[in-house]
Length: 102
View 1 (tube, rainbow, N blue to C red):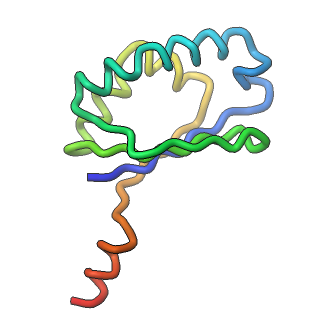
View 2 (view 1 turned 30 degrees about the horizontal axis):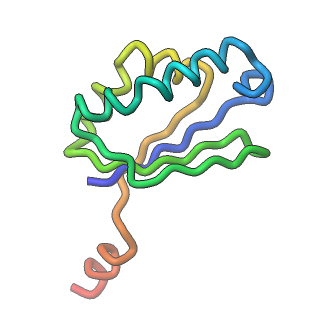
């Protein structure tokens, strides 16, 4: 199942300028691979819009529970602490076309 995560932070909490957020970002990026394996989650793709302080990531996970457990890990909670984040279940455009054509 695919999930779209949209994360946004303020310019004041940007890891490029905020030492605390930078530390959290570095720690998150060091640990996330191991945590994704733990919960059997894969990253399909991830993109950043630097001027908008926006990060978009698509995860492939068995269910929302896996992502919830991931988000409760201390290193992830620390990273989430300086951002607002939304997670939405999504399907591919091909899957939506099949639904429409049924």
